[in-house]
Each structure stands twice: as structure tokens, then as C-alpha cells.
Image (cartoon, rainbow, N blue to C red):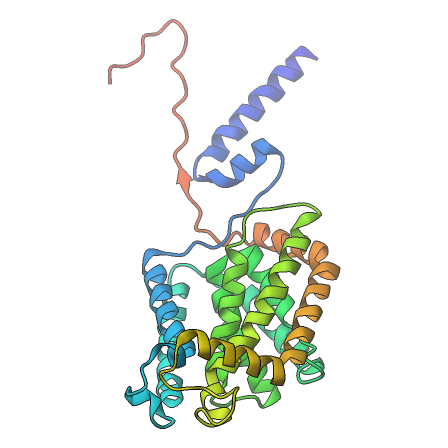
Length: 313
């Protein structure tokens, strides 16, 4: 029995040495803890720069009515939306290319395709019906598990695919894609929290994000919806920021509050109902897919035999 135990120990040690050659460091660490872990897809420096540029362009595309002066060229006419409609796809293409280069491997792209297709299939079930929106919970959960970079790509691809499926392609689509992308991006930046309180955190974030999303989409067309300064809810070109914000909020309350609240409630309920199961499922898929590039380490040299001096150097 002692010999068998010694042989087994030697065999285990030999197997460990053989496994050490070209082995991945992260699985070994996971084995020591007894639980496999995963990390969100990392954002490379160039992708971070592209995201920063996209953030600036997004802020300009949505917020230009609140930032320009009364005598600015954008305040006269309706050319501003078309300028950003032409510019936003270029910015999105560059950003998605940078995020995909070295950051999304074939397995990550496969998961991205599955989630985008699922969102595109679900969106016709609730779009336009009293604000019921059944795809935002996928954006929140996907961004939470796979990270902000993946979430940004997911928001764009899901909204684009669903627009093709539902016939929703139009001047509003770039704004919808950007808004959804930043919703999923923000979910990836939430503080780490596990257990029963994680779905509660995600539901609270979903509620706020859904309301902000509706406000941003209103901001994209509100300057031209009622005519400049024709009513108390109309956009006032070059007016004080506080006054225009009050007008925008009043316009949103009068026109889209029901849809925005419906989206917020639907998303929060779906996150609470499906979050525990889907979070475990997505994290299990992330662990098995192993999106990060493996890091290899050389096997440690065996110790010298006893009684013989170690070779110099």
C-alpha cells in the first residue's frame, strides 16, 4: 500500500510537471481556489481611445441643442441631425473595429451573435406596445457579465439587427444604437456585487438607464418637433441651459413618459425574474469560452539530486 501510494504520488508529480509545460496560468489558479472564475473582456488602449472619441461625439450628437448659441449655424435650419446621422456610423465603425481587434475572439463573437439574434427576435414582441421593451434586460445582463467593451458592441449590433428585422431603419437608428450601447456599457461599469443583491442592483440601474435612454432619444428630435420657441415646451435656440432643460423634461413628460416608464418597469421586472439564472448561465459560458488569450509559463526546473552539488549558474 505504501508503494502504491508512493507510485501514485510520483505519478501525480510527473503529471503536474507535464501539465506545467505550456499550461495556462489562470486555470491553475482557478484549480487552487476550487472554483473557475472569469474576467470581463479587456479594453485595449486603442479601443479605450476610440471609446473616448465615441463618447465625445455621442455627447455632441445628443446634447448640441443645449450647448450652442442662438447665432450658431446649427441653430438655423435642420442640418444638425443629418450631420450627425452621417458622422455617427463612421464613429461606430471605427470604435467597433478597435474593440474587435484583439479583444473579441471567435468565441466572443459567437456569444455576441447569439445575444444579438436573441434580442432581434424578442424585440418585435413588445416594441411599440405601451412602452413594453423586452430586449434591454439582455443588454444589461450581457454588459454586466462580459464587460463594458463587449456591452458597447452588443448594444450596437442588437439594435441594428432588430431594426433590420422590424423595418426600423431610419434617421433615428444611429441614436438608438448609441443609446443602447451606452446602456450596456454602463452595466459593465457597475461595482462588483454577487448574491441576491446583484439582481436588485441591476434592476435599479435598468430603471434609471431606461428613463435616461428615453430622454436622450427625445433630445435627438425635440428641437424640430414643435417649432422653435412656438410653445412653452418648444426648444429655444441659444436659450439658457436651465430653461431648455425644463422645456425638455416637460416635453418628455407630455409625450413619452408612458413609454419610458413602461420600458423601465419591463426591464427591471425581467432582470429580477431572469437575472439569477441568466447571470449564472452567461458566466458559465464565459468560463468555458475563455475569451482572454492564454498566458503560458515554462515548467519549473526539477531540483538537483541529493548529495550532488548544483551546477554553477
